[in-house]
Structure formats: structure tokens, C-alpha cells
Length: 154
Image 1 (cartoon, rainbow, N blue to C red):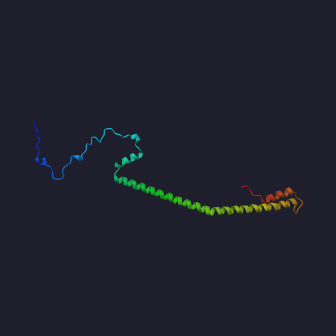
Image 2 (spheres, rainbow, N blue to C red; image 1 turned 90 degrees about the horizontal axis):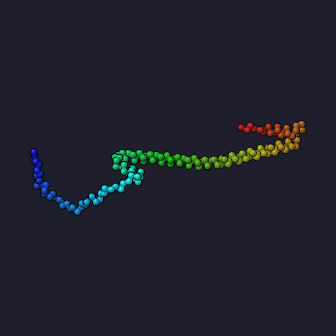
Image 3 (cartoon, one colour; image 1 turned 90 degrees about the vertical axis):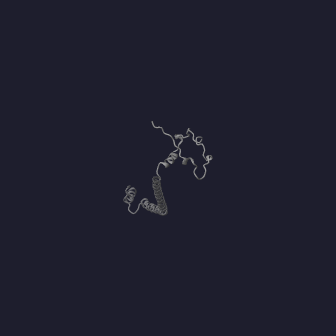
């Protein structure tokens, strides 16, 4: 049977040139690492889990994802900004043009109603006084006058 013996090389026994090692710099790591873990997966938030994935995803992929998210948020922001400005312009234009138009239209309708009322008063006075032709009754004259100005309900 073969027996192995260790031969010590003198070259490895000599100290190397350079600064001397100081054992005081090293600490006992056994006291810093505990076997009991304070990790509780139920208390971990979603943000902490995403942050932990940072090391799993390569930097190039993270950069690409970040660029896509930035481009998407910029596009959405500019669309919302443009639509808000457009709605502001349309709304103020409608108020500036629409309110005076609505007031003028209402005033015109009021004048038309006043003219109708004046016309009805004139016709009513003619009917009550008998008018120029005495052959027809007041009811017939009233219905004839109303039929002249009558408009369909639709």
C-alpha cells in the first residue's frame, strides 16, 4: 500500500514582503450572524418584494423597462395635458359665444311672444265689438281667428 507524506516547502514558510497582517482587523463573524431569522414573509410589503427582485433582473432589462415606463407616463401625461387644455378652450369659448347668443335668442323669443299677445288683443277687441260683418256669431269669429294662427303641436 502507498503511504503519503507531506513535504513542506521552505518557500511557503517565509513571510512575504509588504505590510504585516494585523489580526486585530478581523472580527469574529460568528457573533454577528445569528441562526434565528427575523424574516417574516407575512409582514413584507409589495414594495419590499419588488426591491428584492432588483438583483434578479439584469441591469439592461431594468433600464429597458424603466425607459418604457417613462415613455408611457410621458405620453399619458402629454395626452391628458392636451385634452385638459382643449376642454378649457372649448368650455371658455362656449361661454363667451354661447351666453350672449342665448340671451339674444331669449330676448327675441320674448319680443315674438309680445307681438303675438298684441295681435291677439287686437283680434279680441274686434271680435267683442262685433267687427265689420254682423252675420256671424262671436264664437264663430273667435274660432276662425284662432284657426288662422293655429300651428300643429309637433
